[in-house]
Length: 101
Image 1 (cartoon, rainbow, N blue to C red):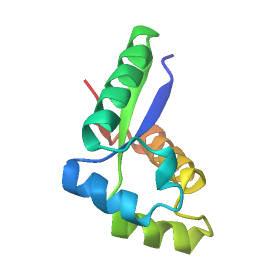
Image 2 (image 1 turned 120 degrees about the vertical axis):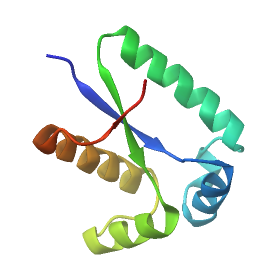
Image 3 (image 1 turned 45 degrees about the vertical axis):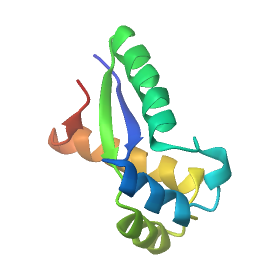
Image 4 (image 1 turned 180 degrees about the vertical axis):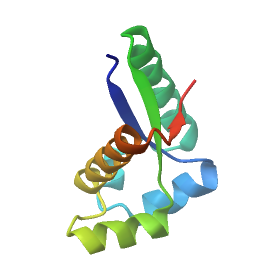
């Protein structure tokens, strides 16, 4: 069975900029949407080459902050990891999600 590996996903440059503005660890993120996208494209390629499934975990910055607050996570890599894990589990339970082709 293939593993499902979630990727924190930002739909466009504006969303990425809004996310960087709320992340408490924005300095650890790629500076631009283009840099982030290049990094994610490489990660997705490696995931697929290993026979696994890459799953989008779409982050809407404002909804993400609310999600983190309601679960006691900071809006940083810890919160992003928890959110991605949540999306992976939902996919495994329901089969619903956005696969990265």
